[in-house]
Length: 335
Image 1 (cartoon, one colour):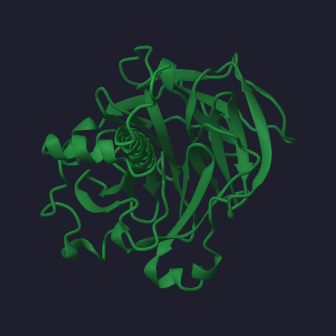
Image 2 (cartoon, helix red, strand yellow):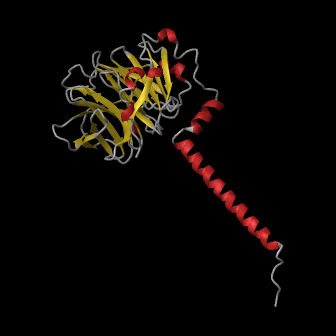
Image 3 (spheres, helix red, strand yellow):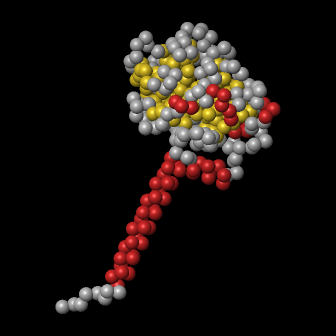
């Protein structure tokens, strides 16, 4: 009969097992932290931007001399946020509808147009047929909506029905913007300047691009691609080299400026009417900022409120500092 192992060896095996458990626990904790930092804090994008030397030039943006004439994004704070339980995933573009005092959002899978109230509560859904990858949305007026089909680099004009329900876009007016290659880096965001009849479109990346489409709604009751003119304004993006992508564009009718949203770089940017840089704000860097994992949609209300959506189903409202105190008690959570 073999003798049992010496007693001196048993503690050694126990210590080895304990060390393995500690290493596994630390590895799990590190993995969890990395997942959170990458998914919600965009750590990888921050590191890539830093290594590439593409940080924001502080001498170009947020010059105090521009404060009075600018939208001035640094003054904005997140005053409320919540999940939209009726939406599971893929929440993307956003647009303000003044006629109805509501918001329109899009989902890209399955393609769906969604109506929200100004507090971000679900109102109605319009399943979309005849379009494959809806990313951007902009209300054109008189019940008409511009939708971007990112995969095909097209803008499609839809008409809202009187009652919520499916919208068949198979034969809807549409036109190509940009090179027209089939990819997943096409037109990502849309915003309409109703006074000047100009639709702005931003291309996500590879390369980033900005376009202005004139004459889409010469007949305000029947917007049509016939006779429109497309202008490439991509040179306006030169000062935005630190932004790795663009997920949304928003026209500011009060000043004639443009706001640009970068999902990967977690930034909001303001350009003036000539494309010159004015103000900028990083998301998640201000006091009280919640996590914004994938900022995809942006729009403005008539009162200057910024509305923003993020995948999978998150809704945010941002207001200037002077307006945040009255709303601070109503800030939401992701629960």
